[in-house]
Each structure stands twice: as C-alpha cells, then as structure tokens.
Length: 165
View 1 (cartoon, rainbow, N blue to C red):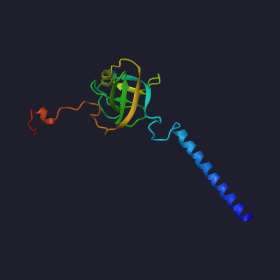
View 2 (view 1 turned 45 degrees about the horizontal axis):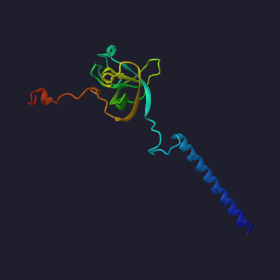
View 3 (view 1 turned 90 degrees about the horizontal axis):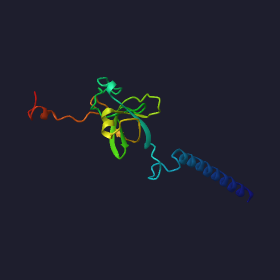
View 4 (view 1 turned 30 degrees about the vertical axis):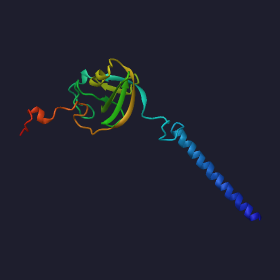
C-alpha cells in the first residue's frame, strides 16, 4: 500500500508541476499580447498607432526615393525608417483616411516623428505642419517605379482608342 501511495503522490506532483509550468507559459503568452489572447477581437492591435508625422517634398522633387520612385508633387506615399518598400499603411487624420505605400526611408528629423508624408499625401489629408496621425498596416503592394502615382490612362486612351504600333 505504501508503494501505491508514493506512486500516486509522485504522479500527483508531476502533474502539478506540469500544470504550473503550463500556467507560467500561458501567463507569459498573455503578457506578450497585452493580456488578451492573440487574435481576440478585444485584444490590442499592435499595428494601430497614433504617431507624429511630418511631410516632405519640394527639395526632393526629381530625386529618386530609397524605393526607386522619382519624387514629384503628385506622388502619394509615406516614408518610414523600418517598413519594407510597398508596405501599405492606412493613415487617418481629422476623419480623413488614405492608404499609402511606403516609398522612402525617413523621417530623419530630431522631433521623434515616425512618418514622413509626401506632399501629395499631406495635401490630400489637409496637413500643412507636423501633426499626430493614426496609422494601421493593411498590406503590401509590389514595389515598382510608379508606386504612389495615380493610375494613368490606359494606352488605348492615349492613342484615341487605336492600338499603337
């Protein structure tokens, strides 16, 4: 009988140790997601962020961005120091929303800004100074030399409907 009691006690202690260990791992998982189960609708969204944004443009017109686009007043995009080229960021400011591709690196000012909007993006959102914006990463687009430009007319429109060639 003593042998069975010792075995049961050992099994109980082993199970208790396993449960406590699992509980510690579960607590660590909750802590790493801000206390909510990852993927839960009430959990924090790590890519939602209020951040400082500046804008850039005139001194950079005609120059290539870090992602390969030629900067013009019409280009609508955003610069970020770490996100890959083509990352799509939904930006909100005073009720206006705009999805912008990352087309450059920056900002490099010393005011703590996370985002640098192009002139076209700032104009569309009504931004004229350094402001606080809402951001959310929503996807990625292929990085091409025309990323950030409004879609142009189809080739047939430029030739009056006839196929050039």
